[in-house]
Image (cartoon, rainbow, N blue to C red; front, top):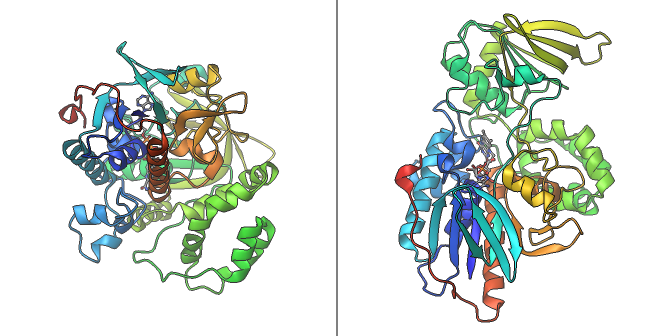
Length: 470
Ligand SMILES: Cc1cc2nc3c(=O)[nH]c(=O)nc-3n(C[C@H](O)[C@H](O)[C@H](O)COP(=O)(O)OP(=O)(O)OC[C@H]3O[C@@H](n4cnc5c(N)ncnc54)[C@H](O)[C@@H]3O)c2cc1C
């Protein structure tokens, strides 16, 4: 039995470490990922020193049964465990844990290659690598993370190709290209915007920074110390179970003024959000996405307190302006970028000039519009299809992908942010870790119940090349 995991970011690496085993009869696990971010993924592999995790260290262990493992790995004391560590340190932790899993197991192999195609074949799948290699796998897990960022609507092709447009702010040197006196437009006012602003500040940026989004809402901040945990009252639990969004909102509004810290309330809802989302009808989900999503995200995905303080300083000084506005058009002009912006509630759009523009709109998960080679191939072959809201890949309860005829594809699974249409709350470590734990259990249960059970295919030569990965 061979299980191939495509994508060696947080999700793929966590699943691989959970399936790693010293037993000779354990299923063979093959983790295939792109070399640049092997073992850590984009969020923790391409981070800079100033980019902080937005979850307290004590909750970030890779193993669902040992959530304190990251804090232990850093040898943090009780106070430090509530702190917000650099994301780059988390990348080191993930790679270290994967390396240990490879060393201590007899069934885990790593291949630093891009997978360009997966085809169904008798009893399983053929996996095609970018270097021309191919192999058979009984099961395949798609864990490619979020999709490459699409060009922003309104941005002309010349601007999209120019140095002045930064479509992927985590790319090495992307922010370093911006001269200190440049006037910068950030499209997006969420966590990505915060990353970019903090990096500009580290580089002693002097020019004005304007951040826009439709509502102009900024993420809220964590408190330096966690608040006391609150238990949800029966009224809220009832509304959650009944899938009654109206009743839930009404209950939360009245509770928010009664609890000491609203953050504790949001955190108490977190274990219920996936089940609640799954209980909503497609129409209710669409309504939530239209009207409440942005508000929910500002309360739910919060900034580390240090980052919030830095943003506040720039807002107070006037160097950073946050506006509720829409980008209608943007193009290159002789000495910069000309944009057409319409402020929220305003009839007239206004032309403004900037030197650089950064796309800071967050994770892209729309598989219909993507240029991601493997995802495009699978979609065109009809092996996967988009969920109705375009939030990711449609799957069943077991995370098996659904093909374009509406049938679950036996043995082909999805993990990571592309499960957003199914689970909604699936972009942060705690939820991703639980999903990996659940899929590991399901794969092991299937493997145990399969006729003949264990490894019958020849073993792979060990291709783990951690020295070559960052
Ligand atoms: C900048 C950023 C900061 C974040 N910060 C936090 C945080 O502080 N706290 C938190 O809880 N969450 C955070 N998140 C959210 C979440 O933790 C990440 O999105 C998470 O790392 C997703 O893990 P993943 O493995 O599913 O995807 P990724 O980390 O994106 O990994 C996917 C990997 O698969 C590879 N890949 C893709 N296609 C192929 C292919 N065809 N063949 C081989 N390999 C492929 C990619 O190159 C990548 O290495 C952050 C996300 C981002 C983007």
